[in-house]
Length: 235
Image (cartoon, rainbow, N blue to C red):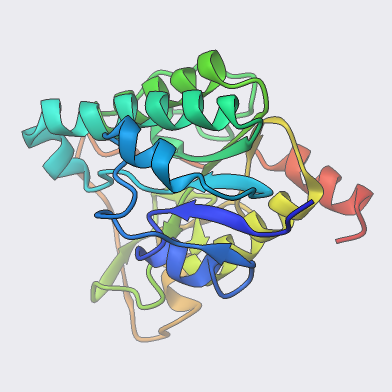
């Protein structure tokens, strides 16, 4: 079997790190537009081990302000890709988000009922269903990551996450691809506050209390299943 992966959205932050770990092709948007089934089908001119689907409109405010566009990319794009990958007997690994949950109780497991926090979360959840309905061989990874540099002078002490920096999450996704996991899996690192995550990179970050009533303060995912799978595979 060919060990090369096809990665959509390979020029983004996560894709940039992931392609350093995997043998892969990362076509440009012009070469591989997920909203254009003809371009997708034409690009599949060789065998791949799997498709890792990163391409999406991920800016939450932009998605909210451009709902039709984000639906076309995040939902219909998943449908197009899943159908054609399925025709080619290719596994699809879809990178979803913790925003499929409301962020109110935290410790969300793979069996918890999703209830998206915003329009972006709705489109990503709908994308999950397109993958599940249109592919016979799939893995949905719910995760979250941050840029390598914390972008703010402060960080919240009362907002909790299982996210980590993008290089850490890229390595976790690399391990998942090597394990050939199927179904839904939550990937991240142990629960911590935004502040705890921020000071790992910069000790000068100042603590701040989030007082915004609608801000999702408990968005961490339960990663027990993921930790057990890594242990089982010797990672």
